[in-house]
Length: 96
Image (cartoon, rainbow, N blue to C red; front, top):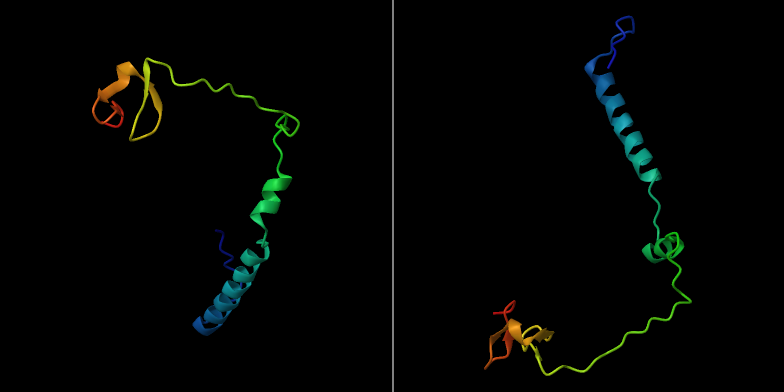
């Protein structure tokens, strides 16, 4: 920061008063930029380009559990028999 050596010098009392006033002004300036905004309103107004899926209908084909698959009793995911870690507890290798 540049120093102006031609400016009149101030005593400590003037400097402390100015610094308090400057701090108060800065505090109000920082808060003036903040606006209470509802996050849901902001999220609703935000749109990604090409992301309008309101008219799309999603269809997922659900297949029954096959003979070579099992349901893990810990994570409740369907795995192939090769992932079976404990046949008594019916737990997959990831959960074991």
